[in-house]
Length: 150
Image 1 (cartoon, one colour):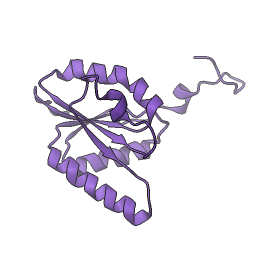
Image 2 (cartoon, helix red, strand yellow):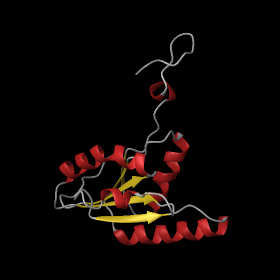
Image 3 (cartoon, one colour):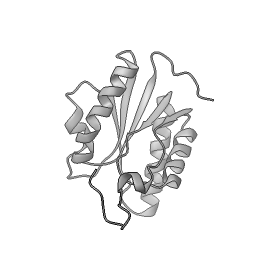
Image 4 (tube, one colour):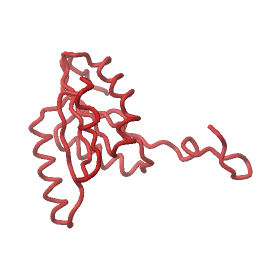
């Protein structure tokens, strides 16, 4: 059963990618702002790679977001684990009501389930958009196996 989202919700938007992925995310962010309204706080959890144009530099003047939570999965295994623990602590303290995935990449159902579990462990009770698209939807093929124009 889905829980009701409060009128003044704390919303976390999960985003992975650099410049191109950020640009194609803008319509989704506009729809989220319309849906949740100005009284809600919408923060963007985004991957960050030093030396690349990141989501924050593209979106900071749009008024679509109230805050940014950058994270990096780079480094050695112990560094990645420490980074993940810091992210868990930050998100748990954020008291978010809902997390919305706007991830554009091809991801497996297992990957989405793992991410959804992580956000649940952070205390976020409702998750939206954490489902994989069938490959036939992303790359339709004709009866001979050739790619079809979409």
